[in-house]
Amino acid sequence: MERVSQIAGGEVGATVIHLESGRKVSFHGDERFPMASTFKIPVAVELLHRVDLGEVKLDQMIEIHPSDLHPGSGTLISLFNQPGLSISVRNLMELMLLISDNSAADILLRLAGGPDAVTARMRDLGIDGISVNRPTSRLIADWDGVKNLPPEKQWSPAMWEKAFEAVSPDESKKAAAIADKDPRDTSTPNGMAALLARIWLKDATVMKPESADLLLDIMRRCETGQARIKGILPEGTEVAHKTGSIGASTNDVGIVTLPDNTGHVAVAVFVKASDKPVVERERAIAEIARSVHDFFLFETSPGALDYDHMAQKIVEALKPGRGERVRFGGDPDYFQELSDALRKRLKEAGAVETSDLSSAEIYLWLPLSKRKISADERKALESWLERGGVRREIHFHWAEGGVEADGLPGTHSPVLDRAYQNALDIDYAALSAAQDRAIKLLRSGTVRVRTPAGTDISFRVGTRPFNKQDGNASARRARAARVRVDREIELPAGVLRVAPVEESVTGRVVIPSARFPKGLVRNLKLQFREGELTGISADENMEAADEAIRAGGDAARSFREFALGFNPKLENSPSASTLAYYGYGAGTVRMSLGDNTELGGQVSGDFVRWFFFPDASVEVNGQPLVDHGKLVDAFQVPNR
Image 1 (tube, rainbow, N blue to C red):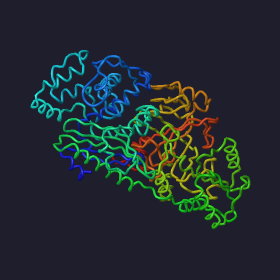
Image 2 (cartoon, rainbow, N blue to C red; image 1 turned 60 degrees about the horizontal axis):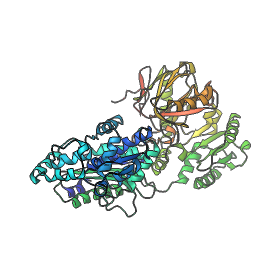
Image 3 (tube, rainbow, N blue to C red; image 1 turned 90 degrees about the horizontal axis):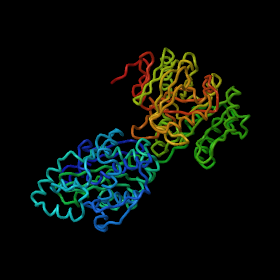
Image 4 (cartoon, rainbow, N blue to C red; image 1 turned 90 degrees about the vertical axis):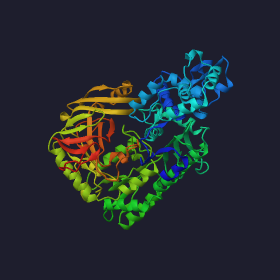
């Protein structure tokens, strides 16, 4: 990136984020650059947020007045200079993003609450690198040296033409030099790339998923800047982007879809203070985009799944005895290569396949795609496990394991395929020893869990049984099972689970955003006393959470479980919304509501809802176990 950026002259900044893995590359990422028309993306973000809140409607018709026709790029000022025109908000947004219409942008900026509201929204989202300070009309006027503008109601295309003609070339040149250094209406590459990533990842704190889909659809159809990010990418590469140009600045920011299902890359490239022709600046942007495309294509290509190796790890975990009967479960149209490899290896180990669950000692819960396990099937499996002995299940869920922090399904990707394969190859003895040390610490006193969002809850586990997922699925382990989940062995391995003593659970759990049947709830706060939910509040749409919890009965109002991940190869990316395999990555905390009888608890019912906390801190009597999402080995002091 640094080498090819020299083509552009001036100063170049670029940040790219591989969205599925969270890998980030940055060059002058914290430097501020004039946004020019790339500022229309944060304007669209704030506008769509107001659409989500019901304050603005996409089909709302906006009357266009002569004073709304502003200078610069676009169609409105050149085609419609007489009264008698109304355009919907949706069509104005298309004009703003497809052809970079400045008049449409300034109208929508006004609907979004103005520059201060857009900047405040960026700050609320934790993005400090983006500042919107002026509409395009005033930005262009300042850049060209136009002074003493009349009141906005007196603006018109003719007024703008006269204003620009009144500025001498020398005055315009001086004004442009000053504007190049103006901190207003600037962005850092890091800030813009972070915003793009959160749009693509459908971060519910930014906007609703359907609004993100709308914005990305328009950006995919952007007509400007074909020689920039898209310039030398392979033909047909999908790019959702927005360009910006003013004076010595040339920019392009967007999301590139990589081939062969290898993911997506958010790209933000800015050029400022360049004395080179625009075509050379554009070439630099194109070269950076192609370098990024090729690097991440090579680095993230998952290759073929090694089904035989997966089968080997499953059989090693099971340690099947000769003559043990195995019932296959799963999806006949999914992961059949794994089923074939398993049959071969199980036969070599002396195990026998059966279609009769009642006669089986082993059940293989293999990955599902279209097929779903029915409630009756689940009850039958639970009853079968309750019969005890050496009966045990291997849970090898794969794609179903990807969840978001609210506990509902996330998006599986090839990056997770590779992570799951790698997570099978760990030091299982070291994993088990680390879990044993954690159990000893957790039993020693009061456990306290806190998060930056405001969670602060304490409990004791006493003598409650721990479910230790350490990859041991042998018959010997099954005979020693204390609770039903001890017979449900997960691969990849790595979680430690326990149902705390119900009456010891006191405090507050805060979930930044959570999906429910009636919509998204923001900043959900659950207050507990003696294990029971005593209060519920939220910053937005609390009724959706309250209705779901009421429908779940008494179990839904009870603290269920504390779980902690230990697998060192399942750590979560800070920018990816989907967590790896049910939060089994080292340092991920899971807490939940509902029935905990499978763990040896006293709460029964038909309700279970998980929540994940990848940034939690956990301590026992002041002794740290997890420090802001990083696992601290029990009885060791964390490095800060």
